[in-house]
Amino acid sequence: MTPGNLLHYGTMPVPFAALWSAEQGGIHVARCPHIDHLALCDVDRRGEGKPIFGKPHMGRQRQLIVNDLCDLCAKPLKARTKVSLSHAREVVSGGAGMTVMQVEPMVHKDCARTCVEHCPSLKHDIRNGTLFVRQVLKHRHQVALLAAAAVEEFTGERREGCAGHAKIELLRWKNRDLNWLMERRHD
Ligand SMILES: [Zn+2]
Image: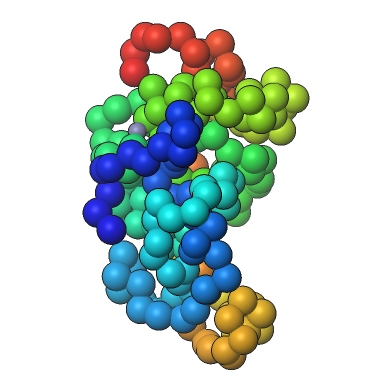
């Protein structure tokens, strides 16, 4: 599936990585073309059934993260304001100060605003302090390999050396808030 075609469910724009109900339950081990490695993969039936917000499709999640693409529109993040909307808290990293490790792909600022405008639960979580708005200045990605037991739990197949989700490590960022996100300047 090529990125870049934004799908809607009713009037709701659906993030590129969101899992669709027709894709549920088919998790298996295969070579993921986005990382060129064995990985846990979902079947590809984007747009079929209902979107399951907050639950990413394994392959599209990796595709966005390793290529630095926006979670909503799947277009490059490069040279634009990059926003992290994540439940992940800051943690101490060895030698490097504080860091954030997140599985949520980043979004353009205007795309983050669109997500928040359409999803009351995001707005609620930001206000409650359980969802963090960060402007990302420096980051890197990594794809960790899963233990064989974890792979077996997902697929029923005991395999070594399979990748799971891609992760983004934030190295430099500014903590932002809902007001910053909603202001229509410097996108
Ligand atoms: Zn975008």
